[in-house]
Image (cartoon, rainbow, N blue to C red):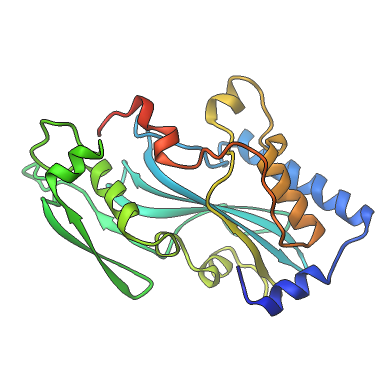
Length: 254
């Protein structure tokens, strides 16, 4: 959350009922349209595009409208990197709906000989100018089910999960000023909430059962809070934004 002054200003700029309903209708439409265009962020467990470890949602409010930024800290299979990715859904125009974050970036692309670039030992990672030491001990990774018992080297999944275990969440995701910059938010923009645990609709729920993401309880609450211009976020859904909930029951190492 931003400074107390910014939150106070956001709280004091309350919208009337008509303005609230217009904002909520427009933001809900943008959320559902993002899903229709496959631009809504869903959890992935490594079967196709990526392996997601954690998510974060941030609410931004400005004179020109409101925005929810969903971030994923993940291993992206296509480019072989661990990094954060931010998706912006807003009532105001943005130049792009997705952007790579400004936090940790780890190259896990194998060498030409097929050798994995990270071995057991200590991995040094840097985020927002601060360095962190991430221990990659075989027995520890196996005991936490990040690795199969017969593993002879770390996997992207193990490296990803151990980074999440060691590095504080603020350093896994992008700084507020970076998100404002890459999504071209104006100078009046304030971030009024940040949340790491909520009930997030799954890909199957949206595309198999025809569920609108905007009607998912916690997504709906985020939209309502933004359109009311307040920072008090009281979520009622069953949190599922973690690798343990999403992937562990059917985990497959990459």
